[in-house]
Image 1 (cartoon, rainbow, N blue to C red):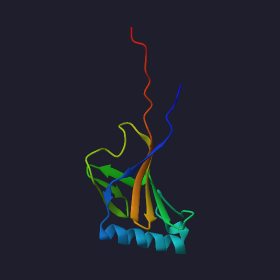
Image 2: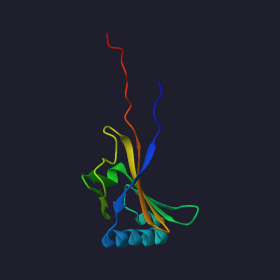
Image 3: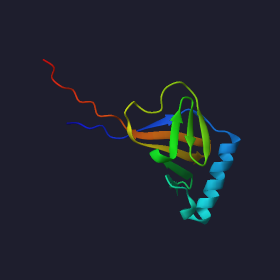
Image 4: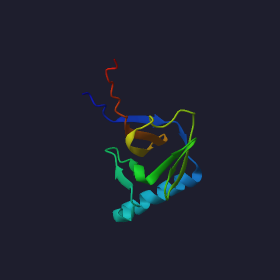
Amino acid sequence: MNHAKSREVTLAAKITEELGNALEALRLSWKENPSAVPKGLSCSESREGQFVLVAAESAFVTLPGACVIKGIGAIELLGDEPAFDAGAKSKSLLLKATPDGWRFSVKFVPPIVRERNVK
């Protein structure tokens, strides 16, 4: 049986000034005291020195048109397509500070579809 591996999809999103300030405050807090990062969130730096925030499935909620990270703020999603396939597992939200601004993506394991012989 062939199981699908995880997928990462970049989201078209709009960041508000409040969310940008909250992310910067989290970055500074993480630099000073890594244990101060709220449960369900993990912070790191890329090889290029860019701040990366990963929110586990327990730390964010996807609503039509938005994604809310508990304790941080909301990201406005542009477009009407759903962020995940229906039935997706192991969802995580990735936010990466890039020279061009924040990049948002979701990583998930698509649902397993089993085909059965129908006679």
